[in-house]
Amino acid sequence: MIIAIDGPAASGKGTIARRLAAHLALPHLDTGLIYRATARTVLDNGDRLDDPDRAVAAARGLALTEYDEDRLRGAEMGEAASVVAALPPVREALIDLQKTFAARPGGAVLDGRDIGTVICPEADVKIFVTARPEVRAQRRALELHGRGEKVDYDVVLADIRKRDERDSGRSAAPLRMAPDAVLLDTSDLDVEAAFAAALAIVERAKK
Ligand SMILES: Nc1ncnc2c1ncn2[C@@H]1O[C@H](COP(=O)(O)OP(=O)(O)OP(=O)(O)O)[C@@H](O)[C@H]1O
Ligand SMILES: Nc1ccn([C@@H]2O[C@H](COP(=O)(O)O)[C@@H](O)[C@H]2O)c(=O)n1
Image (cartoon, rainbow, N blue to C red):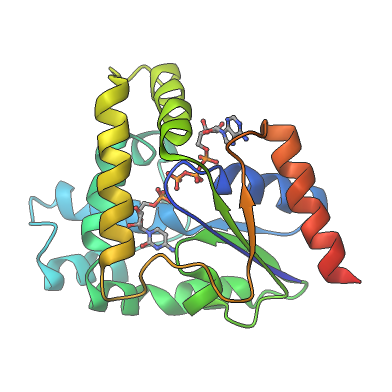
């Protein structure tokens, strides 16, 4: 079974994807990490994030095992990732890796921005996870604070709004809910309730 989970930044899609994958014993791919790792390589090489050739070279050199999650999950890399992710040749360079992961025997859970629309349009289940920007900013601020980053709630909210705008407004694979996806608003759900709601969607799709 292929489960595609999309949604805006800090909506809780990664948390739901991880929980579903563990519950259903399926492999999970957080596709945001791929764009974050691409951006990290570009920055580490001293190149410009909006240079398509350098960003494509970084994307082509990625190995799924080289994710240093701690650094990649910081605020700086989220913003940088959304810049390289807007470049069509970068997205093109990363398609095969994601499709190959999704084609594993038994299926997989993938989360990102274009899983239900571009990477796995044939997915058995598509969930579009969202939450109000203020709630997402609150959660992200708490997370960043826990990671020891200096946090200003207003800055986090502004960053989230900016990233939503860039991800939804780009021409290549913009953030969109697939027509056959189920909307899951987690604004008023805690992690357990959000997971239960997602699992109910999966169970319904199995019938
Ligand atoms: N329903 C929830 N209630 C409270 N906190 C939550 C909920 N879901 C997720 N969180 C917390 O919110 C933060 C963001 O969640 P998560 O990383 O799952 O979002 P995401 O959509 O995958 O983000 P990104 O796209 O930026 O990777 C995490 O700290 C997570 O623990
Ligand atoms: N399928 C995807 C996944 C991610 N992106 C871009 O990467 C940025 C970081 O993603 P996170 O999920 O880790 O926050 C995100 O803002 C997108 O620009 C993407 O384009 N497609």
